[in-house]
Length: 335
Image (cartoon, rainbow, N blue to C red; front, side):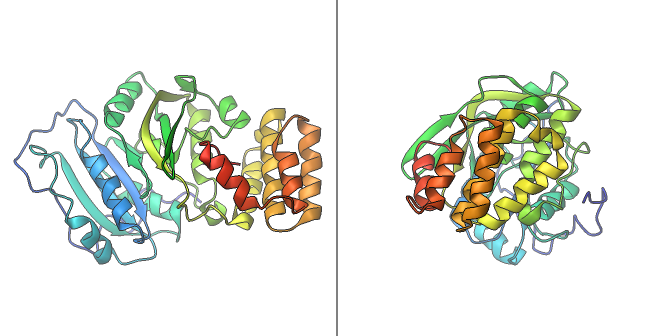
């Protein structure tokens, strides 16, 4: 579902607005203003504070407006969680503001993101998950990449899992719809997204919010190739996701993507990857017959796809699905 451009009361906070308290500065009007949408459930206050601080602390002279959208908790609670860290960078008071809003659209991540988009009056929209962190130089690099006429930008990421930090690069400065059909491209991550306001909304029909970011990137790439800054400028923390082990939701999300984007089944490598994931998720749920059926479809699409034998091993009880994920995450990869 695509929301109306101005949902009722979407910009009205239910908690006091929190603003930095520093010396005044002058916004460079030549730089695009950026609205940073950070959805949260209010259960990761330390990570949320780090995400907000990293956005405000960007070396960027355009206006940065952070919109924290609360889903499943009270905005007042979240405002208290971040109030102590909104005393940032000297000389940037007029450049930055922070608002805490309730999710006023459909419950879940897509509705929260759209609530944030609707609340922004900025030139650009950027996303950041509440457990991720922008690294120095992100906004400057991506706004520069957008200056060439692109509508949507991403960047490489640094995956943090336990004590390990591993960069994931794309090896390209342009991401096309064919690239995203062939591979999910983990580095085209929602916390890297920057796009022109008014061009895109998140599809709220995504089941349990699964793959809404992949869908958004694909729709963006169909409009115009994505400008990609192939340097790790966002730290993505794995292991604490609310969705990491919701196997049934993952199955529904992949089936939704196949129905919404039929081209995903055309590229043999891309199709085999998705079928292999479906085999693995069914295996994790103990559904051996379904896992075997999807594994056969995987082999038919591309015999060398490694997810099929992994799924069969899980289905046979040779290794737990959680162990497979832990081993992959240790290397900066997912299933």
